Length: 556
Image (cartoon, rainbow, N blue to C red; front, side, top):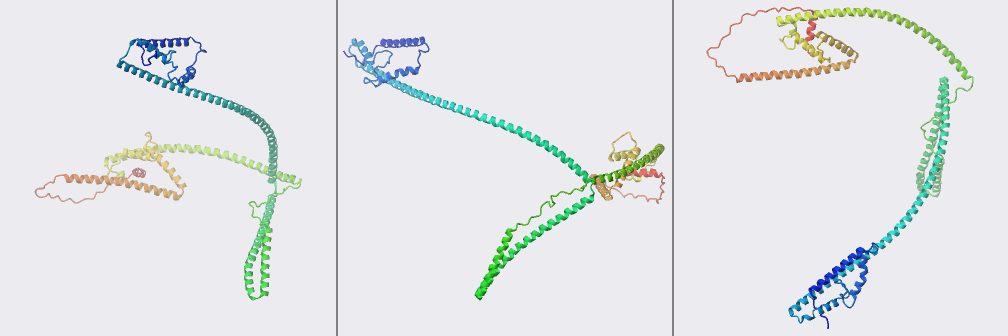
C-alpha cells in the first residue's frame, strides 16, 4: 500500500521528533565538551566536511529533499511521509475541509523546506567565499613571507655593504688622521722656522733703524734725488714710446685717407688716357701697400706700457756704510756729542739747584707775606662785620623814618608809585631774587649775606663775560633783553586786562545804579584859596644807603 505523502503526522509524533532532535543536540554538545583540545574541530572545518555531502544531495535526481537531515534523524522525507500514512490508515476517508487543511499544511511544509534549502545554499556560498578568502589569505601570507625573506636577504646584503663601507671609511679616516698629524708636524716645524726668521728679521730691522738713525741725512737726500731722476727718466721713456706708437697709428690714418684720393684720381685718369691711368694705378697700389706696411708695423710693435700705480723701482736703498771704519768714526763723533750733552746736563742741574734754592727762599718770603695778608683779611672781615652792623642800624633807622613819614627815598624808586616799601618787603624781594639767581633757599642766612653771595656770583659772571668773545656777549645780552621785554610785555598786558576788567565792572555797576533825581538849584562850590607852594624837606642819606636802596628797588 502506497503511503499518502499528503497526510500530516499527529501532534504527539511531531513533539517526539522535536524531543529526539533536542536530545541528539545535547548529546553532541556533551560529547564535544568531553573531547580534548586537539580532538576538537572548528566551525569552518565542520562546514567543510559536510559541504560535499550537501552538494551531492542538492544535485541528485531524487530532488533537493533527498538525504537532508532536516528534522535531525537519518530518515528521508519519503520515509517520514510513509510513516505518517501508516499512522493515518485507520482514520478512514477524510472530508474536503480536512483535505484542504492538509494540503495547506503540506504547502507550508514544502515552503519551509524551500526556505531552508535556500538558506543552506546561502550558507554554502558563504562558506565557499570564506574558503576562497582563506586561500587568498594563505597565498598573500606566502607572498609576504617570500617578500620578507627577500627583504631580509637584501638587508643582510646592505648590512654587509655598510660594514665594508664603514671599514673603508675607518681606514680612510685613519689615513687622514695620520696625514693630519704629519701635516701638523710639518706646520710646527715651519712655524718654528718662521718664528726664527721673524726674530732675525726684527733684529735686522732694528739694526737697519739704528744705522739709518746714525746715517747722515744728506745721504738719504742724495739717494732720493737719484731715485727721482730715474723715475723721471722712466716716465720720459714711456712717453716717448707712447708718442712713437701714436705717430704710427696716425700714419695708418693718413695712409687710409690717401687711398680714396688715389681712387678718385684713378677714375679721372681713366678719362685722360692709358698712360695717366697706369700712373694713377701705380700710385694707388703704392698707397695701399704703404697702409698695409703701416698696419703690419703697428701689429708687430707691442703696445706701449701704461703708467704703473707704483712708479718706484724695486731696487733697495744702498747702504751708507761701505767700510768697517765708518761705524767707529761715527761712534767717536756720537761719544763727543754725548760728552757735550752730559756737560750741558750737569750745568743745567746746577742751574736747577740754584733755582730750587731761590724758589725755597721765595716760598718762605711768600709764606710770611701770606700770613700777614691773612691777618689783614681777618681785620678786614672784622671791619666788614662792623660795617654790616652799621648798615643794619641804618636800615632800621630808614624803616622807622618811612613808618613815620609814610614816604621816603625808597618810595620814589618802588615798582608801584605811592606804595610804601617796608623792610619785610625788601627781605621778601631779596629772597625771591636770591632763589631766582639759582641759590638754594636757606632761611638761616641774612639779607646782607644773600646780597653778598649774589654780588660775588655777579662779579664771577662778569669776569667770565670779559673772557668770552664780545660778539657772543652782545648777542646774549640782546637775547636776554628781548626775553625780559617779552615777559614785561606779557605782565603789562595782564595788568591792563585786569584794569580793563575792573573799569568794565565799575561801568556796569554804575550803569545798574538807579538814577538820582536832583531837586532845586545845584550847589555851587566855594572858591579855592590861593595855592601856596610847599617846599618838600628832603632827607639827605648816606650815598651807600642810597645805592643800596636803588639796588633793592630794581626788578630782576
